Amino acid sequence: MNDGGGSDGGEADDGDAADGRGIQEGLERSSGDPRVLLAMNAVLSTWFAWIVVWGLDLLGTAAFSARNVATLAILLFALTYVTVLR
Image 1 (tube, one colour):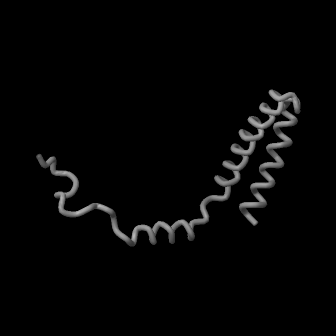
Image 2 (cartoon, one colour; image 1 turned 45 degrees about the vertical axis):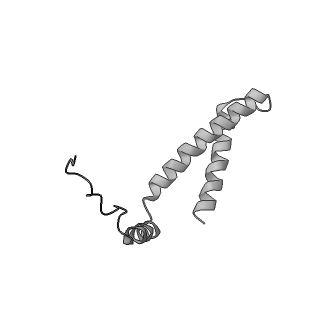
Image 3 (cartoon, one colour; image 1 turned 90 degrees about the vertical axis):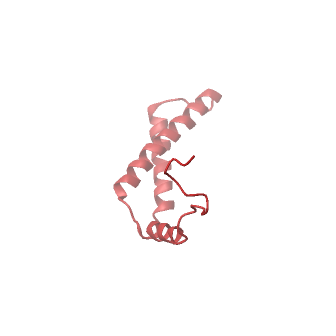
């Protein structure tokens, strides 16, 4: 039964071989919006810092406070900023 979509079975629909090159070229040329990069870095650094400080508080190593989360988030943000945008 043929539903009218897809291939007839004779050809594999693997896409064009040039698609890989086009995507790679597009990724290499695209600089993106730096504000998005900075916002994602800030959010993910804060989220990761929150989890790390919570875990350290669970182990009794550090107190879970906004100051500790903010300090670690700033350090992570700076580290990833320097690493990615150097």
